[in-house]
Length: 349
Image 1 (cartoon, rainbow, N blue to C red):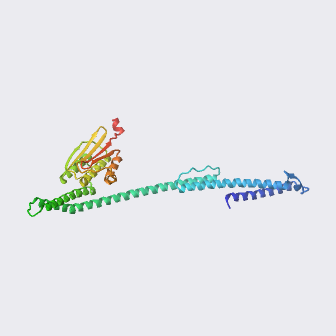
Image 2 (tube, rainbow, N blue to C red):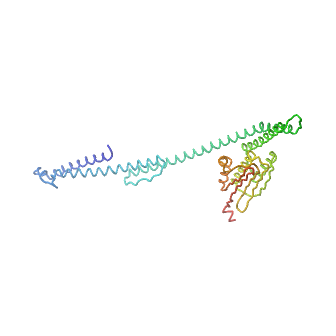
Image 3 (cartoon, rainbow, N blue to C red):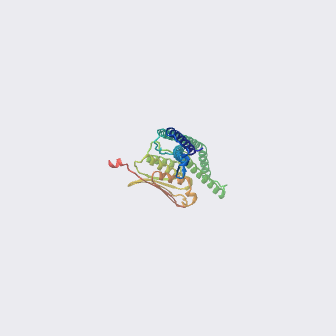
């Protein structure tokens, strides 16, 4: 039976009990000479005895209905509060004049806060665990990349170098027995080995990128470009101005330079490379230009390139822009502009 039904039955039973007790008390104190008067006297066309029973019953039902509705409403409020707690939402405890219900609401509120604190603590542990796991994965990936880079450098890279030296010796040695077609094929093989060396160096740069490691951006850029000029047959020119930058900006600009140089070595087939890092007014400008074969920046393959997207995303992360202009058979120009945001304290000084 529902709460309202139980309260109705209780009210009806209570009203009958009150009627019986009151009637017995009244007739005991004021006994009637003729009991038939209870049926002869009418109130609103209803015998007095029936009227008294009807009124008492209606009052009991009204009381039971109101009491049942109030109890049902309070139970629904508690149920809604528990549902909010289960779903992790906040709720406002209902006001109640009954001391017992006030005590229950305090318990429900305390339970909600306790579960919220537990959920917050669990999420914090989960975040810390995920961050730690991601850090471990990054360390494992970095170690594996370094291992692959070492193995490629010690094996494939050295073999390519030996093959390149051997092919150079063969092509430079005159021979009357080789035909023009054979000479052409040897030159093609030499060019293929040369291109493979460039791609291998670019791959090693990808696998084991040089970190700044305590150096500023200018020192890191110069060290990288000097090393490249010693290892690859490129005419590399640079202009790098001294400036003080935040660590985050330095790291992102250095990674963009590495990505751009790697793309040049792998795809551009360029003869020269120019790198510029300057500051004009409140704008940092890094420009990388090569005279390679270029590409169509509007092609789907270019727009979906991971390397190009990575450079643009790095520029956006430091509040800058990355613009790439490339013309087939003319070369490629990449320009990154980053605004310098001065600290308020430094401006006041």
